[in-house]
Image (cartoon, rainbow, N blue to C red; front, side, top):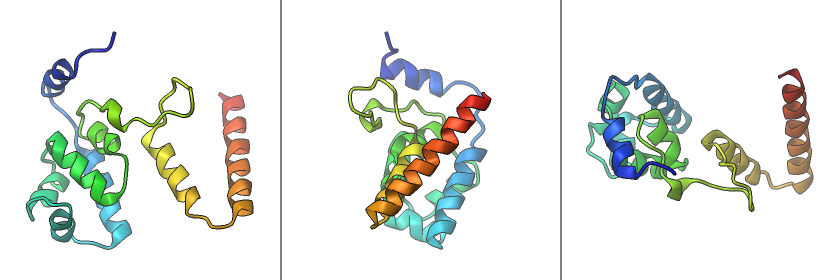
Length: 140
């Protein structure tokens, strides 16, 4: 049985954490939008210095992770995981009846594919990705 969220939160608060991946991801998202730390923070509904503090290594709380993810249009579990908070089931995306969870980067790829207007182009890209994944699995 899965641990209760309260216990996972207590465990997440213990020990040292490396927030470099979170800082890098926020910087990447800012660069994609060509946006300043201050502007992103304000547009996300956070204190104008908050994003700067995250990029400089301060750990955001879970709500801030969710607000930033919403602003950037990404799965909140991605930022929660990078901030080393427990991921929340409510943000998990399952495929059909599968018990496998889809990773945030896979969701991002799927969302990118939905922006391609040509159905033929989308199908060709998906086919190419599946070929690459199949070859990758064969090589172990």
